[in-house]
Image 1 (cartoon, helix red, strand yellow):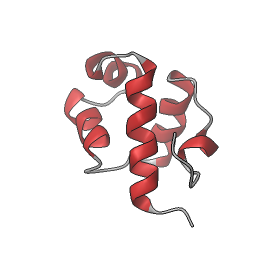
Image 2 (cartoon, helix red, strand yellow):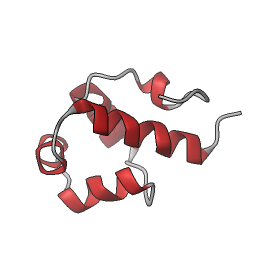
Image 3 (cartoon, helix red, strand yellow):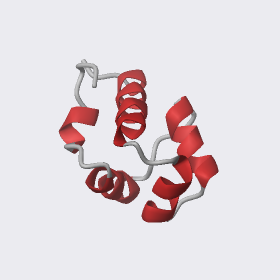
Image 4 (cartoon, rainbow, N blue to C red):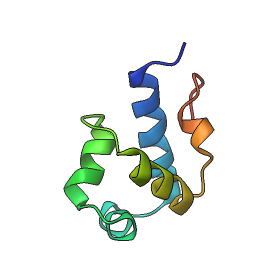
Length: 71
């Protein structure tokens, strides 16, 4: 079963692996650096449209983030 904690960990790992800074990524998806920081800490998750854009920018399949296996 997929848990919220797994999704948060997978999202943080994918963002880190992208090589983009929090500022660069925030500019590309239209959110602040602080928001990206919250995603990395697992404090919050992006809205669905932001999540889709984020996955496209960091070139990751959304299913990989939403799976029960570690990214």
